[in-house]
Figure: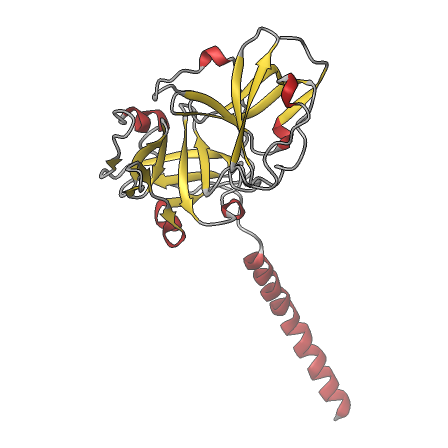
Length: 280
């Protein structure tokens, strides 16, 4: 009797084992992370087409059409040099998107593709740099400011796509930039070669560690005596670091503020000044 019972148990286990293994295999597949791919969303407008609708500084406008743009994130808030915003870029241009959240880089890091539903958003500018946000308000001084998209509405307007997309910086000179609000280089990832900090700035730090001054502007020069402004936030994690003394390449996001052309780095890896200085 005992032997018969054992034989029955063995037969039962032998019969059930393949099913158990199959069930475990199914569960394993279910638990695997999703494939790194983009959602099937129709893109109906380029960033250049969107920005072309902007009529000029201060002409904020609501977007009422059901349009979608896409772009790869080229700047986020990870280092603190960009505050509550990301910058996205496609083949035609780039635009900042204002987000009312902290550590947004955890969901929207550099290299991630996003799809932006434009209906309900507002197109505005800050000092001449066109931006996307939500609604607007006037400051005490009477300036019109673009509002940020609340965190609870991120998914309503922004659909996340694939990670690890690369955008090569465009090698430019200061002459390529202009005060034209529709300059296609505005907000794009750019690279300036053969530049250096001014002689009087080489002992300074990127920002003001005491934060008494919220941001610092530096004038960068190349060997042809051409210059451009580098702007750094004193709230950036690298604010207390000293600027490098050499000459070389600087990568960053170009923008304009009240007629001044500027470049903002994402972090100090964008500053590659390892060559000997020239004397402009």
